[in-house]
Image (cartoon, rainbow, N blue to C red; front, side, top):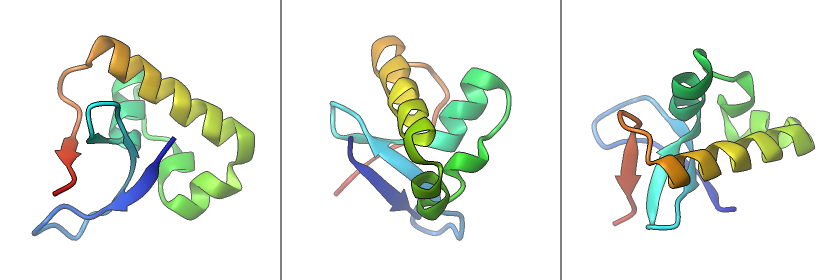
Length: 81
């Protein structure tokens, strides 16, 4: 699983992203909010994710798999240029 911190051009907001199979980047907190109704503190920053240990890793992997399988609409995706 490949993770990154993304700062969209022209925005001050940063998000923790995970690379999808098609090369796009998924905003993990937006995906968590879409799936579970609220953002997760585990995905606030890369440090929070690392400190979250195995449970944070498993949750990120589960979200990535659900999004790749179901292509959930309305989530923020971007591509690395």
